[in-house]
Image 1 (cartoon, one colour):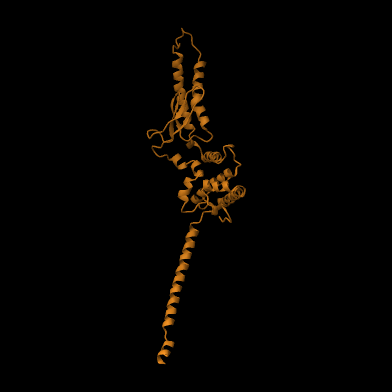
Image 2 (cartoon, rainbow, N blue to C red; image 1 turned 30 degrees about the vertical axis):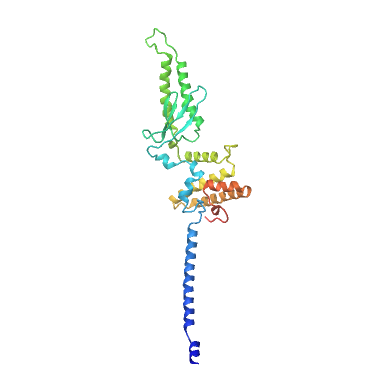
Amino acid sequence: MFRTAARAFSTTSAAQAGSRKQTSSIIRKKNILQKAKRSQEALADRPSVVLGTRPSEELVKWPRCDLAKVLVDEEALFNPPSGITDSSSSSAAGSGASATTTTATSSGSATLTPYKTPLGTLQVPAQPAFGISPVDQELLFNYLPRATAQASVSAAQPRPIGSPTASFESPSVKLERAHEVERAKAEAFARVLDLRNANAKGIAFENRRRIVIAFSTPENPFDPGRPEVQAALKTYQIRKLWKHLTTFKRDVGNRLGLRKLVHERAKILKYLRNTNRDRYETLLERLALEPEAVEGELVV
C-alpha cells in the first residue's frame, strides 16, 4: 500500500513534462529567429524596382545583357587603357581597291585605329562620332580624298613652257603629291570626328541610335515604335537618371521623373506580356530585368 501511494505522489513525470516544454520553447524561439533572418535576407536581396536586378547579381547580370553591350562605355572612351585592340573591316567597291581597318597596337593611340586606303594608312577614331556609319566612313576616308586629289590635278592650269614658273612635273608626280595632301587632310578630319569630342547630348544621341538598331527587327532595322525598343530606351533613361541621383543625393526634383519612367516601362512591359509572352520573357533577359521588378505593385 505504501509503495502505491509513493508512486502516486511521484514528481518524475511532472519534471519530464517541464523539461520537454522548455525544450520545445527553445526550439520554437530558434525557428522564429531563423524565419525572421530568412525573411530579412530575402527582403534585402529582392529585385530592385529601379535597376531590375537583385543586389547580389547586379555586377554580374547587367554587364552581360544586350543593352549594356550596345551602350557607349564612357569610362573606356575617355580613359582608354594602353594596348587596346580594335579590328573591323569594310570593303570598297568601284575601283576595286579595298579599305581595311587593321588591329591597333600598343604603339599607337588607344582611341585611334589604322585604316588602310589607296592613299595610305590613316589613323581614324575607333569610335566615330554619332551619325557616322561604316558607309559614311568609307565615303569620307576612301572615295572623297581620291576624288578630290584627282579633281585638283585635273583643274590645274598648265603654264607656258617659256615662263620662269613653268612646271615640268609629270601628272603622276602631281597626283602623288595631291594624294599626300589629301591624306593629311583626311587624317586631321578623322580626329575631329572622334566620339570623344561629343558632349553629353551627343553621346546620349549615339546611345539611343544604337538601342533602336539593336532592338529592331531585320525586316525594319530602324523601328523606334517597337515595344522592345521603347522598353530598352526607358531602361537606359532609368539607369542614367539613377546614376545621377546616386551621385547627387540632394537632387529631389528628379526623383519624380524617375518614378514616372519606372511606371512607364512597367506599362510597356505589361502590354508586351499580354500580347506576346515569349517576346516578353526574351526582352527581360536582354534588359537584365527580373519579373518581380516589373510586375505587380511598384513602390519606388
